[in-house]
Image 1 (spheres, rainbow, N blue to C red):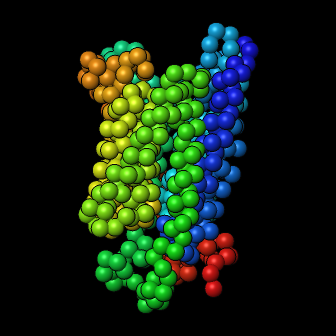
Image 2 (image 1 turned 135 degrees about the vertical axis):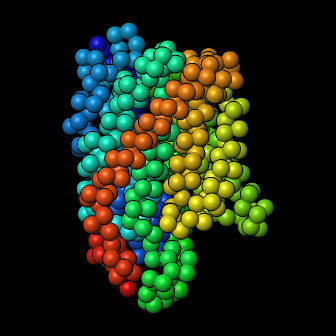
Image 3 (image 1 turned 90 degrees about the vertical axis):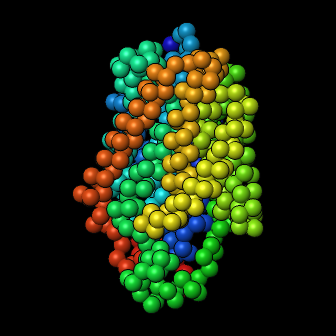
Length: 414
């Protein structure tokens, strides 16, 4: 087999763009947490790469060997992408997922606990789920297994389930088992808050590093074109659809959430702008290469609405202490986007017929069932690992007051 030079170059460039998203997630977290946890947020971005990629290159042949032929991922007759270029592209998706989980449960877990979770995630949990959908695994052929939709299975163009819903659900379980932060206790009239913490929260600005979150979001948007556009692997007409749909949905999601914040709260909220952009990008991710650009406008509007009201709903439940908005932004939008695949898929673009184009309900059933099975596995394994291992690395109240920058990294503000 020979190297498909154009596809290999496109995949390599796309992988580098996706790699950029990992530190961008660190910037996003750093801009949305207490000042005394900024360095910790950025360090977790480095940790996601440092732990995941070495393990991934070691286990990749085990989980994805079935899609590799003679050292290549086939892209045509006698040509393909070299195995390790393809592995690198998939690997940065895994690193992004891990970084999102880190960001979804900030301020309460010591760095050593995150290291242990990263090893489990990298060696076992994510490779299994990814291979089930993207490596020719059983979820990819669930339609044949169940008989509901022969020739079909769970379809996730660029990671609505495998990355975003996965990360949000895992982060939610970690957050809820660790319990809310002291700041959230204080905001909800909790009695466990110590006086020095209230003082620190009073003298510190609530969003002193918000500029980092805005920069992080911009970098994420930039990298997302490799995330979605590169998922075609070969440069084709579908690549153009994926890129155009990503641009439309991400931009419109941010604008709609911003308009809703202005209408309801009389402010052009930067938090809602950030969240809406990310929500639009997340919802279009499983659909990007499957739908017409006209539908990307619908997806962007829906994502802006879901993000805005999703954040408001989640904020009411103080036990879901999610200052980065992982659950509403990545969870709600990732799940809705994945569920819409068998509804909106255009037959000429995707090779699949969605409901609106005369497709059957069997595809819908297979898609929704497969998503539930994959996310159920993520929820169950994360829960067990947290209960058995991570819970002992929960910060004490004193450590939380001081902040993880000082506790874990011996740096911080005086």
